[in-house]
Length: 319
Image (cartoon, rainbow, N blue to C red; front, top):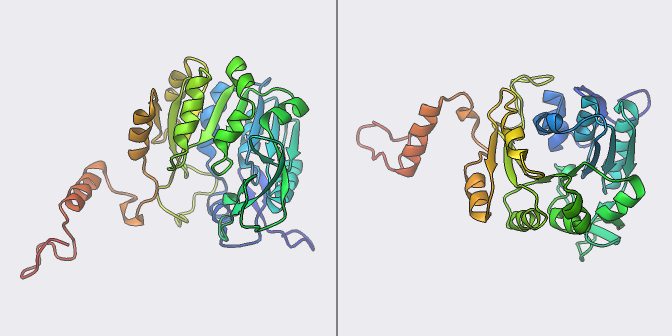
């Protein structure tokens, strides 16, 4: 909060950021405890971009990804966010902290231009608000919907297309499909555990992009403000990347001192296997265990054993 402005502000790796009003908001809590959000995600892309690169950040939310790229010295950033509340915070954060030329666009991104409505709203995760041109629950006023091709015509071509649009990634890709196929920019799409990821993979193979699965910890070992009290333990995010040949080698070489998973993906079976092996949420008690200890717990879980009854006389060890 600054002066009479009630908007909460926190000092972060990116500079002072305006935050959502709800103190229980997921990303606000992480920014307050760690001073950054999924910084590894942008760091993985740093060697793939240069000072002439133009990045489209679709689903920019508060601007953490856009600002990280700006800090790396990319040429220009176009940050797109549909939610009016988030877009207002995004504009303030970019104006205060962005060090490269940028544009902020308040719009949803979909297959066709028009209007979009809220189809999912999460009280404690403003960044998880989803929009669609299909009929929704009327959880707010409709917003403008544009295509990626519209954005390209208005703001120039892009070298990186980052997609975090809450399930709308496939439609966003299709909205500029021929240009993507012919020019092969780097595509970085959020990869959540939904059946829709198969369509993203199908698109990348159709467009001649070399698909690579990347999973990375939300929390870096040496974050900007490494709080011992994590909002949640050992969380991972994941992306399906597509680009020119050699993408796998470039991503695999950038370990960043973290436990990052990089897998070549040829078909949907490869993707299912990689996602199945990705840790998503775990218990706080597991956080400092060695691989051997985790393997022991996994084996006992498979056998249905319970610590509550382990070695206690007169009780069974089965849960």
